[in-house]
Image (cartoon, rainbow, N blue to C red; front, top):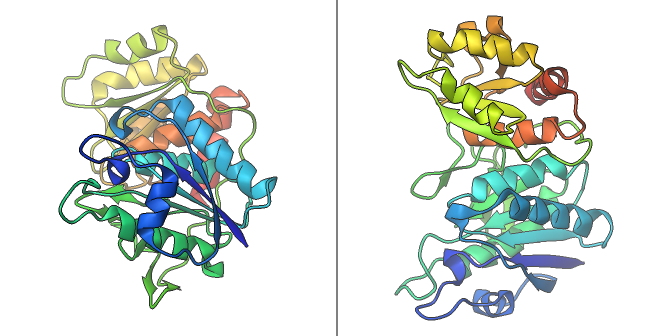
Length: 303
């Protein structure tokens, strides 16, 4: 059994005057449960991670499991956008059976009590456990395991309002809930030009047409807890839908309802957070197809 460790820097690797390599992090984490091959990937700071980097990581994970015969993959990642990259990886992983675990750190390696080495040790142990094979991408911090679909950065990571996937107990994975259903298989290269806009009362509709005029092939709107968006946007949502530019509405409270916007042609985000809905819309538009393809893909995510 061989595991691939992809190290991208982030807080976990930050020292006062340098950045630890993946090999150095592995040594600090202590003895690994299986053989580990390390790859260092040059990446931007997590708060500014580019879509191209996120796609490169997702594709490397998929290739490692599907073609390179690795049993599992662990990715170290800055926590700011870890949940988005982990979910994109989940969407592109297809039916890969290997364990996929993302981990990071809240405190730098130069801190008096860095949490990175322990988090990496836990992630390696979790990835090597057969319980996570076929479960999709998982986020591991401390001894907690969160499905990438639900993981959200708080003061650590949380799956709320969904149950946590599981935890590590005595060096073994103990699942406390079932993994979410696997997403529809992705077709084609994801469309990277998808906009995300937070709605607010009296929001001018021109904001929607501005991003599409600049090239956005789809738009995700963050609505209220009940999934509503300002009525001023209804006409523009309808116009964009008729132009075959999908508009997805995601509730800030992760509810599945999107209110009256659905009658205007908007697509519900299947309970995804706005930032993850953007990842899903990118994948949905990979093979073209516009509104119809996006509607079909998000419908598949609800199953």
